[in-house]
Image (cartoon, rainbow, N blue to C red; front, top):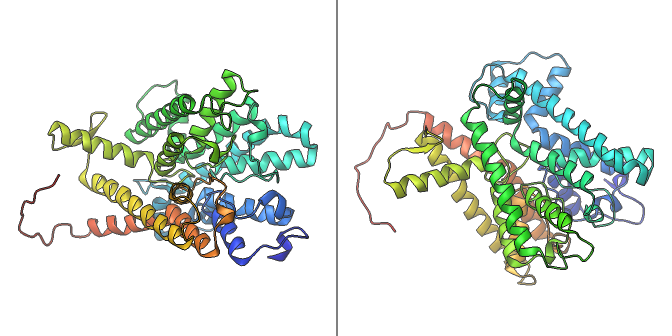
Length: 423
């Protein structure tokens, strides 16, 4: 709407729609500079959309129902169960309430830490606003900034307080509400008892991806003057920014250096991390860490000649394995098709590798960009919108429909078995 942007700027319908979808899908790709073009009203609308997108539409709706004192029907509880990716129907209302408190609590803590830096720099009003906006954007893995300079967090590349706070919010938001709550209870009980397999897999996979990504990016970019090789960077600054890049690729989209300045190897690693994304029931997108762990476990089982797929001495049922295969294959096919479409629409104006980067960033709801998104034609921006929507909603919806169909009368019709040669 015209009252959402500053005088002297005009936002097209496609760019306005792009910004709205990017906020609700907590992506962070921007067709216009949010902090420069949008006024306070527009920025607050974006903040509300980010918060709703981070919580999830059903969780946000459930929160409104709770505030109104509405009782939840069985249908409501089933929908909330699916939204939270919970196995049990019992306690889903309580879990939704806990997830909401966790979200606001983490965002408040993050805003308090960021205000230590932002209030002295911008004054009380703007400092508090910047702290809240970026804390919400980080926890919801959105990646939007409102500094209005087009530099994102590059001015804070040597500020451990800001970068570590943002990283912590990204990681906690990406772990998933259920895992964070379970891990919190486990820690409060002195690390006694057992974590669920879900929590173990998510925590181990997240730690591995962060460490591996940090090491690879630091090794490749250490002397690159456009990224980590900036002359003023100390060794500690380089490691911190390498870690920030590794964390932010997991669906957050903030950047402390130019993404277009990376070497091709780092860009490829970034694309892979963006495609994997966050964890189930978290605020991020991607095909999810657990999906990739199941796929790797399947490969190990095949290589070892085992019939069962196991993770940490627990057998994974075949419906989960098949669902993981389908999610990854659908994701790869979708990304390939959308990259082809955007490349065709742009008449080869840009390198396919740069377009692939933008498409995967949109599909993984990451928001990292090689300065390409604002330059795309309207049709390409619509294609990127489809990528954002598919990454946040589409594959989940498709797989839910498939899983429901599998649950209904599985095996009523079975055809004769036949062998074909593969590989």
